[in-house]
Amino acid sequence: MPDSATLAGMFAGGARPRCYVASPLGFSEAGRAYYVQRYLPALAEHVEPVDPWALSQPDEFAAAAAAGREHAFGIEVGARNADAIGGAQLLVAQLDGQEVDAGTAAEVGYATALGLPCLAVRSDLRSSGEPGMHVNLQLEAFVILSGGFVAGSLDELVARLALLRTA
Image (cartoon, rainbow, N blue to C red; front, top):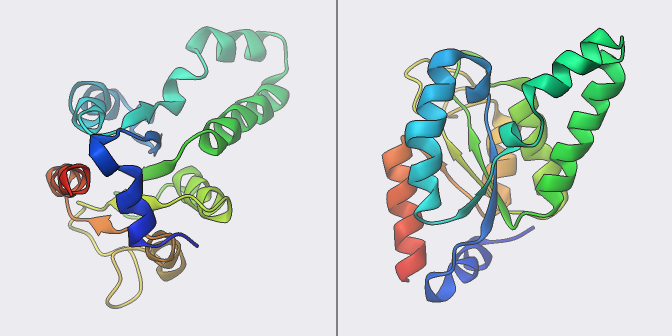
């Protein structure tokens, strides 16, 4: 598994590594607005975001539904996302919610299995894990063991990315 030195090395000389952005923010109108207007631009200051919400278009979902191939298209979307994770150098995961989004948790697991460092944001005030944990202990363990960390806000994540780029 990578360590914090590996993470720091990705940002050496002010580099902006390719970063898969795992989140459920695209599922709601409010989430999409925050994602596009605040989240992605903040990350783009320090990484090259790989936006999985841009890999598949609404008209593709509509066409698959009309053709009765929603399941097959769902698998195709999952494969696109897996390819995008594999082409990234690290992953950032949004872990808010009473329960962490299952797809986001799966993306973290997949990324750590590939050896990518994972960073996370957990700004939700609600408890969502075992005592002493930000989220489910296994999910948080994958983030930490990957050489990453859990930030308490997007601002904290961006500040820590800035430190990595200037180290």
